[in-house]
Image 1 (cartoon, helix red, strand yellow):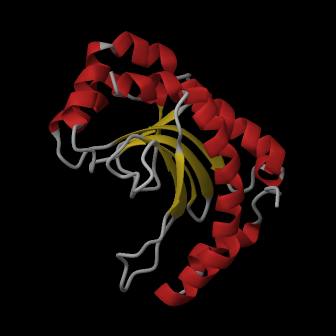
Image 2 (image 1 turned 45 degrees about the vertical axis):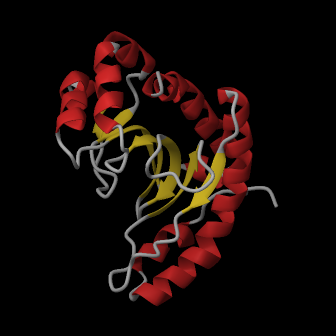
Length: 205
């Protein structure tokens, strides 16, 4: 199956009450699309990076009461997991799709990666286009335009604060026609990931 796009019903999933009920909807409506998207993008990223990348789809297994507010796929260079590694994400909240290169708080060598970015701050700033966004917490919906943040401050906080994170990429509003066109969305996402690969490589230097 080729990815045909997202529908309003996918976003409406997050208004379903109850953990079990919402999880069933995520598994039936969204996860098959994640697999379609992920299979394409994992191959693309493996080719662009030059080493094998692996698809992970969020299971939300730790949840026992509260239903998830968002869900995502992650693509990382590790077969067993993604949270302890830089990874690429595509996911949904109730009102937008997010596309990130994500460095989250579980990274064991987070401070070292952050220092690497700070040591090459001009490269970091040149790599991130002015229409991209930054998030410092993958649990929150909000993100800020790169134009409105001090990247150096964000990276210093990412280095020094245990729970601080660094996610860079884009949001797409749930009403954007782009989401209805599977091929256009895949091309759009691939371009974002390709733009961010220099940051991915820099993290590992």
